[in-house]
Image 1 (cartoon, rainbow, N blue to C red):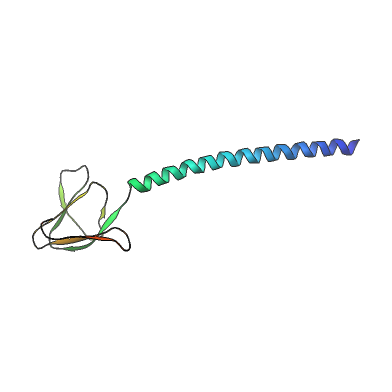
Image 2: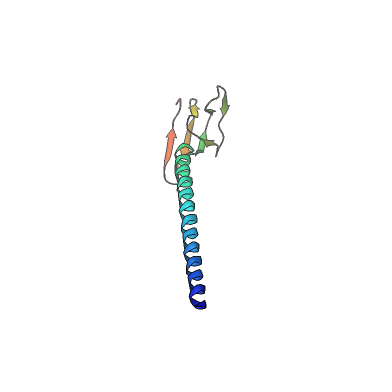
Length: 107
């Protein structure tokens, strides 16, 4: 009789443990899924490119600003930034390891 009572408690404890483990994994998976959605949204909005080559006078106006500033090599660019080249000037913008945009004079 005693062994039956102990085994019933053991089974109940095991079932409770499995239920709590399942519940915590479900909650963790849901939270991780929400974080992944946020990361995807952030990647789309926060794409950063850089100025990889400058020849001559190249100017930059940051998104949300009315002031122009002189562009510099390796300067990060984000959506909404504006680039301007003077005569006899050019700039190269590196999108990723294999993709570039080249702007000529008076662009």
